[in-house]
Length: 198
Image (cartoon, rainbow, N blue to C red):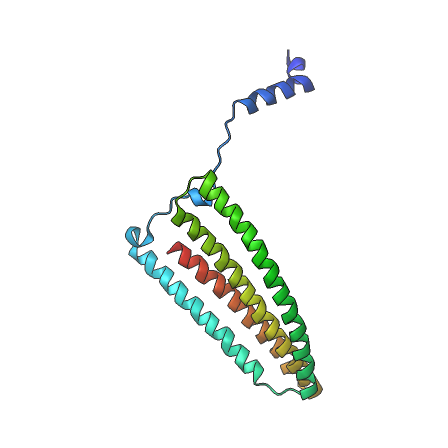
């Protein structure tokens, strides 16, 4: 009897029988019911507002570092090379922006069809999902633009600092540029996430 149950055919039949009894359940994040944080816990609501304020401070820090790096000494030829690199990157970013626009239209149609037609979701909810899709792409695109500009500025100033024989600045300039970009990226994403939670 045990040999019959452990044979490959018997195991496959048992597995098939088990799978036939399983009914699939389809759900997405849009089906989650999130309670109102303000009504449930005012302290949590205030905590999220403080988080947004801290994220805004992070954005301000990033832009202050950008301005500080931009003001550093740089040789004109090095600045010209950095600007040429940025113009090339800007051309790439514009092309990527056009591609993302077309992609977002296609994804938006899929979102509208799935949530509006298949899931029978109200129009306002579908529009909210579409809006956050666009906001997410714009946030990432903006941080990419900022990061490329910051890096091209920092690279030319780091090269000039190395010519002046200042090893501390050779380390600090890219470090500050990287911190600035990272803090801006995290701040933008946190602001969006906390706004959604609110």
